[in-house]
Length: 414
Picture 1 (cartoon, rainbow, N blue to C red):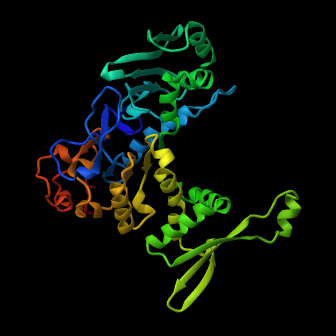
Picture 2: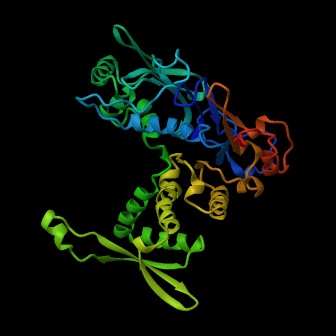
Picture 3: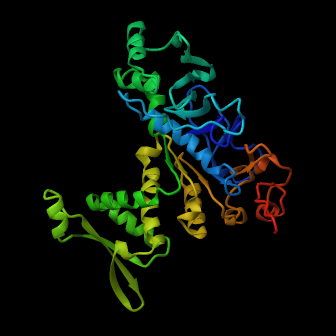
């Protein structure tokens, strides 16, 4: 589970900005929080949900992209041809243009707290550091820094594997891949000191950027075609969010003569057929004839389902969605947030949105709303509404539009 993360010199982020899922003390709605399970250490409660608001181009999406950088770099395999790493520095400051972007994550996995620090340019990993906190005591696992002479490593005294294996991991680590990735891939399963945190960095959180819904819809179709239980759950989900769809089935598509001539070995795709029931009776529609809203719902259900599966959630997952309101109606978003809060699973939902409906639903606490805005230098500033003066229970939406929390677009009249 995510405790907090920080980012600097990345896209619109100049100086270090920190996003935290640590719950503020003495606020009500304790059901919106959960207690992280950690061996020998007691941490503050963590939030189940956080919503990020702000004007267009204020940095909301860049915050989500920073997390996606970690996931993408953790998934990288060594390559003979260098491929630029997915970072871009803050361009308005000439002193930072040639400096690394920096991302720092604090998280819990398998009842252990970790701190992972990563600095990187498009060309290489500049710095990589992992610390664990057994029984609350800080313990360096490894540190890697790039210098003119090459990568310099320092290993913690208690790091598993031994000197020979550590040397092997170093030799296998190229300039654009993580040391922890090579260590996890080239060690036995009983060496968990690096394997466990790597599992979380690679798969402990799911990031869905704006514009990914079409691909998710296609993947959801493939999953439904091969998994009857998933199909039934998807159908139930569509009914719960007030669509008239009562059944989903698949038909073998007739082979297209032209396509067969072009690709003789290609099998025709199945057609997804959805049954609608109204007061006048039933009718069937092919998926391509459905509204974009229905397609978005089918796409969104895939990560929502994965996020809600107990076998994954017990490993402390976080679902992170950019522009959730562009895919789902505000009432549906509110319903999903409410379901997530009511569940007993220690999972987290983080999303960006422009819709302020949630501010007025009394579902979330003050510390669950985050705001982004650009300063005079074009740099993103990140704050929680809880950082502003105010009392619990006040009308957050009204105060937001009054400009009490800033983070509103400034419109010029011409």
